[in-house]
Length: 313
Image 1: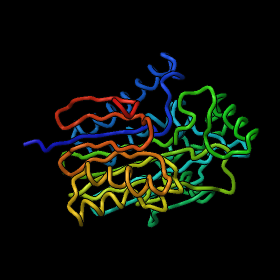
Image 2: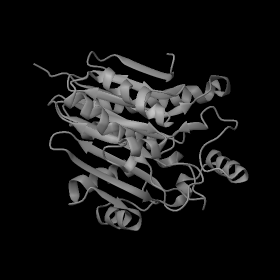
Image 3: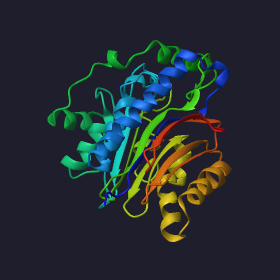
């Protein structure tokens, strides 16, 4: 008998305004989301591992200029990209992460290699890239990541003296641009992956929650896999992903109660905005957010595809 399997993805949560969303941009984003979730689901359908599924799904979003990860990463104060990513496999709680990488096309793949090919969990900056090149990752010039949209955002932030996304002509410039995926495979394995370009105009080598196991990413077989998106400093302080897992493990809360208790409760009370995606050991998917939108999609255990943008959908 085939065991249930499912997958969910996100492309960031925050203020996503329909009145500023052109039909063309919306169509492109919806297409990216569909391609991402279908790519990951195909891995699961063929009997593949949950970790390979979430990495495959996240790679699609990293390769798109429409999301703040990989190709579409925001720019630092020095007009460069610095990307973070992490993965976790729930079977024996294996994990891998990278932070501050500048020349790696798909940081989520590098995070998986850190997990599988090193004795470490988190590698940063030049060391992470040295490891990458030793393990076959191609050097990617900064020009590959540069987009006019991100450059305009950076100049706007510099003019205002800000270091986070703010209002401008784009529908999601107050969105916390992380991408991620969670999955349950046919062997009962849970996995999660998260990737980001961070925040516009960041300085000092800032790292958010996407590279932090237990804050932005967590997976535990028999329990839950979680990937978050939001105001990274708050998600780190609240250890959001592991808090959801702990509520399910110790309090026996179901996936809906656990996720919403954190996102709508203590995190929101602290001033933290954002959301998360989660899947439990039965393949049940839940999306939670305290913002007005989150790019998201899933294919459930029945094979039904769902793609949404706004909170009230």
